[in-house]
Image (cartoon, rainbow, N blue to C red; front, side, top):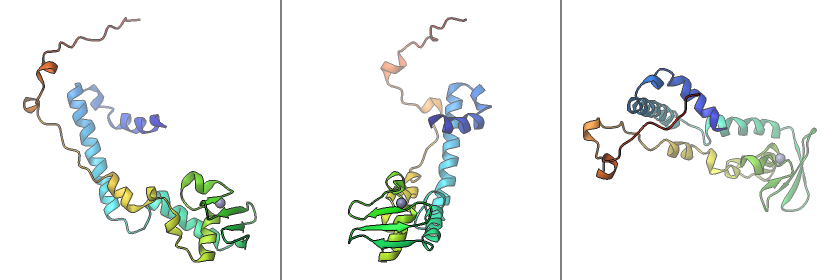
Amino acid sequence: MTTNIAEPINSVLRFARMLPVVHLIGEIINLLVKWFTERRELALNCTTTLCPNSGEKKLRNRLEDAARMNVVKVNNAQFNVLDGDMEGLVDLTNNSCSCRKFQLEQLPCKHIVTVCLFLNINVYSKASWYYTWKTWMDAYSDSIYPVQPHGMWDIPEDVRSRVMLPPMARVM
Ligand SMILES: [Zn+2]
């Protein structure tokens, strides 16, 4: 999972990797500033309740699926949703579904969506705050500032006095 993000960064920094480490860090900061700005602008222009790709699109597809399903009320808290290929037993007391998708994603599965429509509950209220527009905005709300020129750095004396030697590496 962590190598997935490293690959695009490596490809973007292909030429910068040849630079001295201070300049490389400057290039990485510039890249992050650019990415944060782009994502902040996207989030600012978002008009949906959930993030468009991660939450809203999935939930709208499930709303379409829910229109073709039937609900059998087992009791006041449990509902069996019949969808042809895979039934789902929804339990509203612990917000779970037997298909386990809701517990895994924290985004209503098609069975939960169907029960929400059946009971006239706002389906967005069942989605985790992770998927909301507000969380998206918060993720990119902080600013990244460029590194000051070397002459302006405030370096503590104990760091300044250290002698840095190249690593002890044996050439194979
Ligand atoms: Zn389900």
